[in-house]
Length: 114
Image (cartoon, helix red, strand yellow):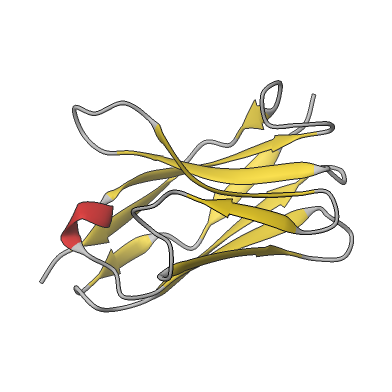
C-alpha cells in the first residue's frame, strides 16, 4: 500500500502563489494532483509520469507547474496567479505504473480569498 502525504495548503489572496508537496512512501512512475471544491466532483489538475512527461487541465495551464524529485517520491505543484475558483481540497494521487490504479493522499485545503 502506497502512502501519500500532502502539505503546503493554506489561505492566499487572489494573484498569490502556493506550493504543494506530496511525499510518497516509495518511488512512483506516475504522480498527479486533483482537486475537489464544495459540492463539486473531484477533477484532474496535473500529472507527471515516466521521465517527466506532464499534463495539465486547461483551467490551470500557464499558472500551475508540476514537478518531482529524482527519486520519484515527492511531487510538487507550484500554483501561481491563484484565483478564487482554485479554492478546493487538493489531493495527491500516485501509482507504481499509472494513476488509474493509484493511491490517494488525505488532501490539503487551498483557499483563495481576499
